[in-house]
Length: 367
Ligand code: F6R
Image 1 (cartoon, rainbow, N blue to C red):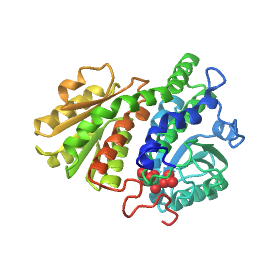
Image 2: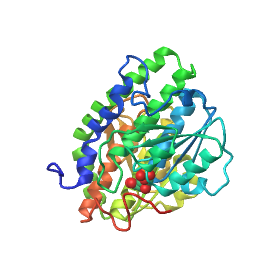
Image 3: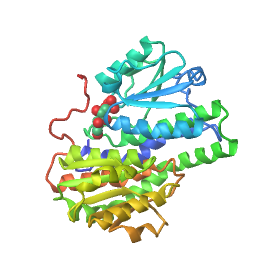
């Protein structure tokens, strides 16, 4: 059942190219645009009516939502609010008609996410579920559904469902942009082409990253604290990398917006600290590089996720993990891969059961 892999998590990480292909391809089959109602589970009229987007989710799904926010704001020019479902449901949120509330939940059964979706619906909002499980409660509680088609995920740590959630949010953002006439046709075509290339880019990345990740896991597996930094779409990648490491290796991690480092977390740095920086090509790369210099000036160790072909960043880092180039808004799907693999390599070296980490459940049906 593990198909020759030592764990489900490893198998599921390596399934990401296929899972993405299944999630993406027939939604971009009609040439240069996006089609989201091919399953009859989503009436696109609910997208056209949206005046504001609210995203609610927990854990890894929340990180996918954060990436979705950048795409929706940038491409579709709609205001987006996002909150952790367990916070949203108890804060008496301002929500109602005109709002499209998107609950992202792999299992479709997370109690807090379902409660946040129900609350929004009671107040007159339209609710869309992004889920991996057909027939799950989220599909019944929503006005429309977008499925990730990652296949069953057994490892407790979300991997392939995360990259597929990000892809769905990007497709949704692009469809919203089309419906609202926000992007020139050429730009849409370019982004669609970029999305189509993601599965093969993921396959390439997974193939190439192994040796560099192994070297780093070997060097750092006994570490007791890791800091993760990123900006813009690199920030949710940092948050997700930090969550992966802490949940399967039980190592303490922190993830911060790189610009916030000097407002507190810089005090944590010393000669023992590995700092993982998401430093892929983007308009904010120079800013990330300055933060990397600040980290090094404190004697800490920079491990940078970079874009293949950018040889400059290596001068500012002790180690680099390059991923294939894509449009910078699409980069998270690739940039998260080395962080998943690194967390895995470290946890395995510590002799831990990565498929069933202590204290965690795959589906959280109680709040
Ligand atoms: C982390 C992880 C959890 C889930 C969270 C939400 O690897 O798996 O943080 O993402 O429990 O679960 P769903 O997406 O099923 O609502």
